[in-house]
Image (cartoon, rainbow, N blue to C red; front, side, top):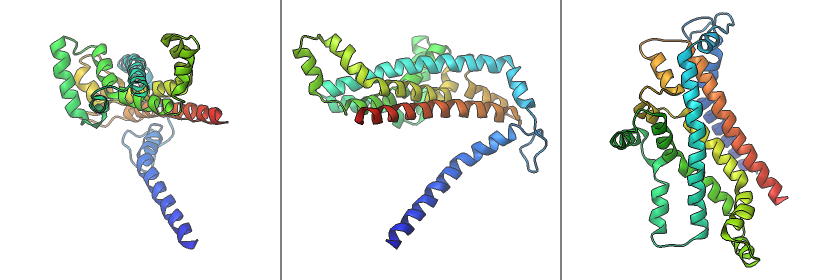
Length: 265
């Protein structure tokens, strides 16, 4: 019993250290975003919102925020649609080469981002789409669709596979069964995948930097600001990006888990 308690304490400390390692830099960035001093040093200066006022008055930041919003929303819709179609085909059908088909679909997140960015740049350039917002949306959709597929497939795995067939036997068409059974049952996972893919797209830098051209997103603007100098505006922009992404991820988790609990109760 004492050994189990000691093991639990060690594991809890280990998890705490991981959280501190991950979130401490973000916390310091948040603190320095309200620091009057230009350089991130201790002791801190006085409290100020000067850096937030500067980014809110910068038209380039607003343009980048608009681009990031368009890209993340469009990516979420497209990636979730592709993920739903893939998850449903895996759930409903058995066909030849299904294993390689699923492996190919789940491959993009395993590819180093710099390699994928270069490949996307070459491919989109041949299609004449490089340097446009649509190029970022297409590239981000390829990256995030596997996440949507995994979330929705996990939800479909909880459904009785005979439920849809029963609806067919009762006179429903395939589209009616899809509309009244599959989609409502998958709704929590669909909303969760929308939030998660939007968060991943909003944060993504490498692919955006290669294929965006003049249509810069927020992560690309951050890189341009920090090149060659130290600018406290980066802490303010980074805080905004972090809070936006974390809000989307938390909403995805809360909605998905709460719906699962309701379905089991």
